[in-house]
Amino acid sequence: MKRLLLGLCLFSVLFLFCYHSVDANSTYGFFTEKEEDWLLNHDPIIIGYSVDYAPLEFIDIRGKPSGIALNWFIGIADSYGIEYEFASYDKNTSWQDALNDMKEGNIDVLTDVTPTDERQDYIFFTDPYESFRLLLVGNSSQDYLMKISNIRQLDHEKNTFYVTEGHWQEEYLNSTLNRAEIIVAKNMKEAFKYINEGQGYMLIELPVYNYYEENYSYNHIKIIGELDEEIHHSIGVNFENETLAGILNKILKQHELTVFIQNDMIEKQNRNYYLERFIFAIVFIGLLVLIPLVRLYFLTVRKNRKLQFEKADFVSKVFHNLKTPIAASLGYMQLLKEHEYTEESLDYINATEIRLMEVKSTIEKLSLMTSYQNKIDHQLVVVKLHNIYLQALYDMETIAIDKNIQLINEVDEDVYDEVFGNGSQLYQLFELLIDNAIKYTGVNGIIRIGSRSVGKGHIQLYITDNGIGIPETDVKLIFNKYYKGSNHHLSNSTGLGLAIAKEIIDHHNAKIKTKSKVDEGTTITITFKTIR
Image 1: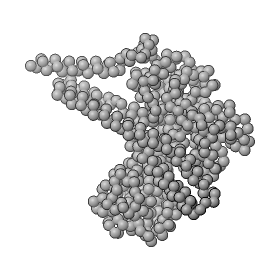
Image 2: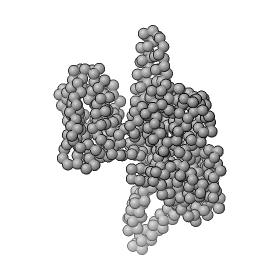
Image 3: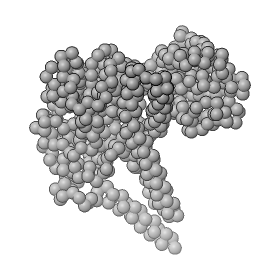
Image 4: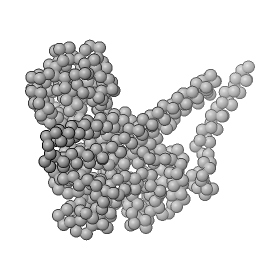
């Protein structure tokens, strides 16, 4: 009996070993013999990338290459046994430097590159794995231009376009425009800064615009138009590695990449090697009964991943397809208001505008929930909490005044307030919490907003109101997604605001506490760890 059990255990180990060996080195059925041989015997490829084209490719706060396109390619490489190394880039490396490395044969692959006529001379391009509409970004003081059939419509001596060195926009605009001024910025942040500070235009993809608008304090930029053109994103391969180009093209045909942002989230979770080794150890010591349970576990994980992908895919498609049309519609509403109408017509226009803003807000909240929960990269830098906190306070004063609510500033600016954080997220957090206090505080109410030191290395922010309060049974549930308290009928709530606030707090490793009493008011405190 012992020999039989030992034999079954050894057979199980051999079976699982063979199964995983086949998974890593099998013939996939669509590669040529030459391509199969390359996969089995190639030297590590060198990957080049952009250091500041976030969220597609960038260097993160740890100095590591990151980004949606880059991480997605790494997932593909790991799945098909392609060994790789990263080029030694830092934050001063320009995209032109990466292109020069490709020309000189110093790198083998660029994971996210736009095909252009000039680049065709030294790069094999795969079929595009994603395409984006071209957006025209300008200063918030500029008028909406809506649909633009051709960029030559803006080819005028008074117009200025900002580009970054080596990126596709530079070649595209230089080959298209004759009279407009084209200024080359050092990096994306500098280009957006120019737009934020004055007049000028940028051509950019929607994910890139969203990232820089969200993560940096560019309060005076906006999408002012959309071109009837698309920009394509491909993988670029050095001319000396035609075999790799063929392999990547075939891999792309096996994977539908309609929403590669979500694919990146899923690829990060594809394999858990520590768990697999644990399973091997359990099988090896003879716990054969675990084999069907492990199989059931993997089936459940795969099902959950599929559901997660479908949810993220749906939210992304809704957000991607509706954000630009809604922005355009709001622009049209502004234009309509400039003409004379009857009072009834103006009421209808204003009501439509309010409804569009509500739809836009709900879509943005759903998109934020998806991005936080799926851990899309959100860069953390050193920020001063008081500056962001006070800015949110000042911006919400108009809403408070409409309800005759007094906002009292009790911020102690002598308290040390530097933390690692994302300025855009923190502003949204404070705005959500102050807005929530205003919603549930009656006319002539008082809201106190302040800060204090709570021991070495920590700062605490608080928001106290004398509003309707929260029932004791609801206090522990208010941060749950879609939860509306028993008094939700007193406000037009989606049940997402405080859930987003909690996601932001968790992302910053902060702590939140809520104290409330019905008919007396609520106090919310958030404790952050300072950098010293």
